[in-house]
Image 1 (cartoon, rainbow, N blue to C red):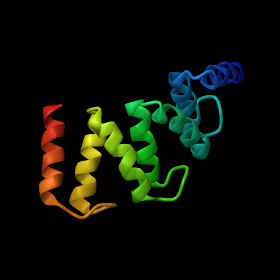
Image 2 (cartoon, helix red, strand yellow):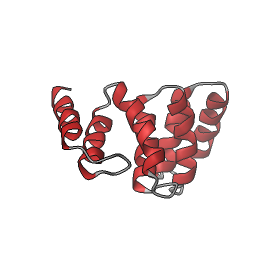
Image 3 (cartoon, rainbow, N blue to C red):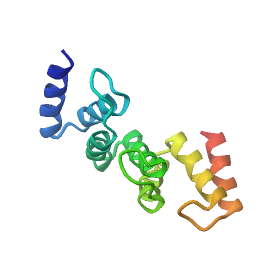
Image 4 (cartoon, one colour):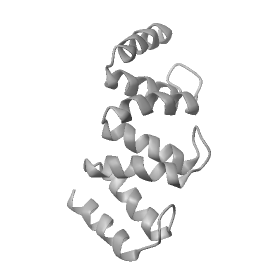
Length: 123
C-alpha cells in the first residue's frame, strides 16, 4: 500500500511536482510505512527546497544542523535556513537566532540573535 503511494509520488516528483518531493521526504524522515532513511529524506527534501519550498528549505538546513542524513555541517545548514527565514518560516527564523546566539556557523552576535528572536515573536 505505501509502496504504491511512494511510486506515485516519485513519478509526480520526476515530473516536477515539488510538493510530491516534500511528501516523499516526510515518508522517509518519519518512517511512515517504511524504514527511517534520513539520507533519502534529505535528497528528496532538497528537490522541493530547490524549488522554493520554505518548509523543505528549513528541513534540509535543520538536517545539516543536527547531523541527520549527513554529518553536522553548519556551513551547509546556514544558507538553507536563511532561505526559509526569508520566506518567514518561523522555525527557520528562530533557528537563526539560536545560531547567532551560540555562534554556530556564524560569528556570534547577540544583536543579530535578538533581531531574529524579535522577528519570530512578530510572526
